[in-house]
Image (cartoon, one colour):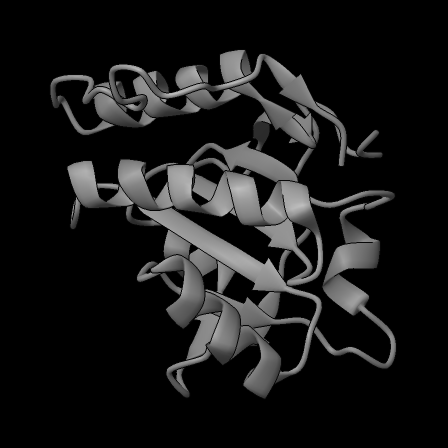
Length: 164
């Protein structure tokens, strides 16, 4: 379980991004709600979850904020993003001490937080939760006054839950 729960303030974070830029949570929230997704490249549930976040990102490109935080090296993370087709911003936590992961109280990955523009955690989810992913999709669409895009494809076998 994540230590931070809905209603709590999201810890401020600044991390390097894969593209060489610097990410600031405070600055990112000025553009609306943000999904912050923590992952490790070797985690099968992370490999399952991040492509669904990519679908949300593509459906509302330029209107939603989704950012992943890798707990791996730059090279390993680059391979992962190519292999799984991740195009939303990916940040790098310091692999020697994991300061941002620790600030968010992580115990497992993937862990996702939906953070309001006011900096409050609105939703937290650990592992894969179909219901939580659908809720994130709906809330991001609502925040940008967009139609909710289908998240799952016909015939796709999508479990209700997978532990991280």
